[in-house]
Structure formats: C-alpha cells, structure tokens
Amino acid sequence: MSAIRSSKFTHLAVPKTIGNSESDWAVSALPDAVLLYGGSAKLDHAARVPGDDVVLLVIGCGDAINYRNFAAASVRASKGVTHLSIDLTRATAEEILLAAEGCLLGSDTPSEYKKPTTELVAIELVVSEQHLGTDIASSLNLASRIVQARQIINTPANDLWPEKLAETCITASHGLAIELEVWDEVRLAKENCGGILGVGKGSERPPRLIKMSYRGGGKHLGLVGKGITFDTGGLSLKPAESMVGMKYDMAGAATVMAAVLAIAEQKLALDVTAILCVAENMPSGQATRPGDVLTMRNGKTVEVLNTDAEGRLVMADGLSILTEMNVDHIVDVATLTGAATIALGNRYAGVMGHGEAVNLVQAAAVEAGELMWEMPLPAELRPLLDSDIADLTNVKIGNRAGGMLIAGWFLSEFVKPEASWAHLDIAGPANNDGGPFGSTPKGASGVAIRTLVQMAKNLSLS
Image (cartoon, rainbow, N blue to C red; front, side):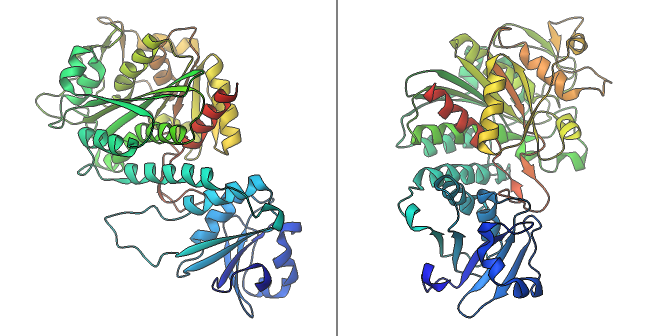
C-alpha cells in the first residue's frame, strides 16, 4: 500500500461493499483484521484497522460504491487525522470527480460561531496511473458553492436579514459575469410587488428582491428562490417548537444564488435570470393581518387567511417577473410546506408543475444524485383557494389534506398555463437535523444546487 501513497499520509480510506467487489482489494487482503476491528459494509460505517505503515479507514458502502458518498464519509471518519489518503485506484474518471466533490461536501460546514476541531491539512486522492491527469477543478468549484450556500443558510437570523443577504450576493458575484440588481422597499412598491411587501411589512428590516442575471447565450432559464430570513409565522404566530429552525426558511434563495454562481463560473452556454424573494416574516402593528387583501405583481388579488403561508406570497411576485420576461423554463425552489415533509419525509424534494421543466428537473436530479419525487396537481384541489372577496386565498382554513399540492396550485396562478414550469418544495431535505449521511452534513444540506446546475448544463448542450 505504501507504494501508491505519499509517506506523510498516515491514514488510507478504503471502501467495503456487501460481498466485497473488486474495489475492496484492501479489505479482501486483510479479512481477519477488518473483522477484528469492526469493519462493515453498512452505509457510512467507519472502522479503523491499524497496519504496519498505515491505518486503514474502512468505510461501509452498502451494495455498491457511490464515490461521492464514500469520499464524504471518509472525511467525516478522519477526525483527529491531518493527512488522509482516499483509495480511488479502481475508480473511473467520472467517479474521481464525484469523490473530489464528496471530499468538500463531507466536511463539517465551517461556522464562525464555534471553535473548529482538528482539521484535515491535506487529502490525497490515490488514483490509477491512467487517471493521474484528471482535472477535478470543476467538481471542487461546484462543491465550494454548495458549502458556501450551507454556511449562508446556517447563519442565524440576527446576522442575516434581507439587506444583509443582498450584500452577501453582491460580494459572492464579484469577478463573475453576473449582473445584479437589488430592489429595496421603494422599488418594490414601484414595481407592484405586493406579495413581498405584504410579508415583509411587519419587520423593522425591510424586504428585498435580488435579481441575478447571467448571459451565456442560448436557452433562457428562470429561477426563483424563497428567501424568508426568519419566519415567525407573522400574526398567525407559530408555536415555539415550530419556530426553531426557521432561519433555514431562506434555503431556496441561497440554493438559487449558489446555482447561478456555479453556472457563471463554468461559463455555460445559456442565459439565466434568478429572482431571490427576500423578507422577514414578523408580527407587529404594521404586519399583514389575516383577512387582508394583497395585490400581486401580476395584478391578481390574494386574501391572506394565514400569514404563516407567506412563502407562496413572495414567490408569486418572482414568478410573475419571469413570466413577463418569457423565459424558456422556470424552476422555483422553496422550503414551502410542512406538508411536503409529511408526504415525502426528510430526504426527498417534491416536484410539481407543468410542461417540459418537470421532466428536465427530474432527469437532472437523477444525474446529480439527488432525491426528488414528482407530485400531482389534482384539479379538485384548486377550488379550495377560492375567495369571496379576492381572486384567491393563500390557504384553505381548516383543510389538512394535500397542503403541498395546494401550495403548488397557488404558485401556478402566477405562471402561464402553457409555461414550462417546475416547483421544488425542499422543506424536507433542506435542513438535516439528524446525523450526517452520505455527502450531507448536519444542518443545511445545499439540496437542489447540483440539480439546477446539471439542468443548466443539459440546456446549454441542447
């Protein structure tokens, strides 16, 4: 083993699968030692097996090796190790790229609020001779943007409010071919963005709309991200236990931001316009009341029956802007409903919509290795949004059925019926409040960034 590694690297991560495949060469060579020290093929399981010149980190990979997850688990298992080698000698060039990505994604998300533990100084990817020249820069760039988004999403609301998020976008865009506009509350009023203003009016920190434009030529992809920097529920106040974690309610906006940054870095041949709809949902004497009527960007009126169904209100204005621009495809991303978690659990995002965009998102998610599930928009649910005094309501009070789907129906009112539009409800997987798994750490996951970038790649080649 020492012949394929640099001598300063004291730990070598190797995979173990059920039944042991060709890639398990190191495990197969030391079956008794691996068994003695608790080596297992159980996903993400790690065991340290001492050797003469190296400590093996035996990483469980289940039925087959997912190299992104294998590398991520290897990094997590290396606590206290400063120099780690990862065995990729049986990996293809594409699998090496996935592993490079996993090395960054598997690390703890950096936090300025907590002292770091011992950190890895260096990671060595041990590859076969034929793959020594593999360029991993693009994988590292994408992974870096995902980590950046995780850091932003994890930031507590006392340090991240609408104006601050706008400043973060400006700073992150420096040096890239991205044109950026920030609409303050005065501009939002001039632009008739009644949804964003209505949600943000209860906070002392006024709302913002952030428009990021990248022009690479070709198809035009429109993105919308929900950016509620903290969601108390407004006057329809959440109970205390439901308010914990509401700093994550701007994950959609951070996802869209990171995707545009990665697309610009890769100089993909398409146009992208992203709208980040950013507000803080707070109760006050100025806050929107249940029963108030808001006029949205596209002129439709909405009777607000529950101020805690606020995400769809800000998203409506963003969708309306992209509809006016006649973009080729629209994808919106939001931690929109608790109902999505009830229906799909904590690891799947729900996909709704109509037209080609739904299939494009689904195909990109498979390629990117992200879990998404298409959900219907049943016609019988639409009447639940009927209002006696406005064009529609934002919820049906007392209804407990199909909450995710009803929210999807609401958003559909702000795109054309013939539009290529997909809505991603990432309420479940956006925040991992359990232990780390695969390439997902505890806390913000950065879900859907890889899918959006992969979709953009596919469009740039079509």
